[in-house]
Image (cartoon, rainbow, N blue to C red; front, side, top):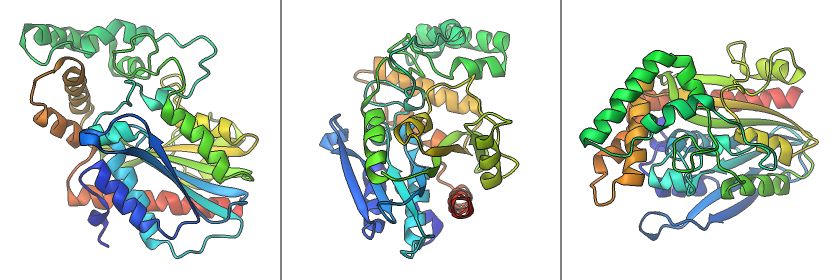
Length: 351
């Protein structure tokens, strides 16, 4: 297949292709999300293992953590399945997690059925939830309560002033997750949500003997268009960081944990303990940050305050912010995604 053919127009079509290409897998868990899909569509996350059930090493490749970002990750997963020959290094398995946030993927939302950002939800909810002072300052203006009119104009003016005052890095910290405004943006939730629980349940079922794993979560929306940035979870001057850099290259960044709490890989680390899990976010750029944020704000306002409004254009802009319908962009995503998958497998094989 041509690389562009691995991109499909919606969640249902992406899932259909993934399941078609994954028919030769060794074990499939079809985890049904009880939340409603568009027009009665059943929502599900697929957990597919290729390779032995007792494997001690594994690549875990995840798509759709941020819902509407799922098109790129799904395409990479399908492209890898299309070239899979049935052979892997001895004692190694590959697990595909397709559409972790199926609700957001199907509804073109970044968040899940509870308005929760999954990449902020994998924290210890028994302890105190982090307080994000930056979001407390900027959140009301960012999560505008109107799509247009004077109320929206006021929110836009206030947001522009706050962004100028705070600076880009502080704005990034402000959107790195908050746990107090349940109807706000970038909300991490107060309990483990369905997708969180599913990941923790099914990874150990598929990989009961794993001792070393590479966990790669594919995202879109940050960075230069089409460029796949390797963003590590681990702190510098640690053995895990050194191994991640060995696998994924010197250009990999170190953890941004001061900005972002609760990533999905933290759940994999805990669920597969005492295994060693080396985590990476593979982030593909799309549009400038200001355009991505504008699309997120409009979609958020539509969801909460747009009853009776035709949201076709807003949803199209939301999709375009995270998925570029351009041949060059698609080719870059597939090439880089397969490279990272292959590098992960080679690294695991010699570790």
